[in-house]
View 1 (tube, rainbow, N blue to C red):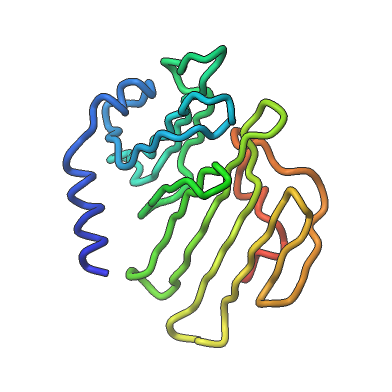
View 2 (spheres, rainbow, N blue to C red; view 1 turned 180 degrees about the vertical axis):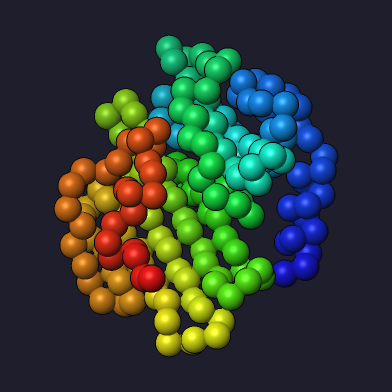
Length: 184
């Protein structure tokens, strides 16, 4: 755990000015993680960047899409203040997986994961997972894992149905979190 925290702190201290500047980010922003992968399936790699804001302590996500076979210079999608202690990968289906967590500080420990997919020409939150626990009251908290594309999910291991279409990535907010993933 100390190694992960140290790595995040070192990354925050060592800016990637290229990523932050290209995202049009404020001077207080530094790049943390950058991934290139063909997310929209057109054969050209998109670029996703997690940016850390030193002033707000939040992490933003910028995605640069390819249009007509060319990677755009400005972000196609920019979502501010998604979370903190981030990591980002791409799964075997080409979806972007963005994870935020708190596994060390305070009473409440949590892990939040977004699965971001390119569907019908737009980026959507295709999946959402959340786990939390209260270190002082172990019977509190829970887990959820929902697939917005299928409308299926689980809450504490039991099946749940999720209604409605996936949320557009640039429209995601705290209010987009399904009730099945609310524990407190």
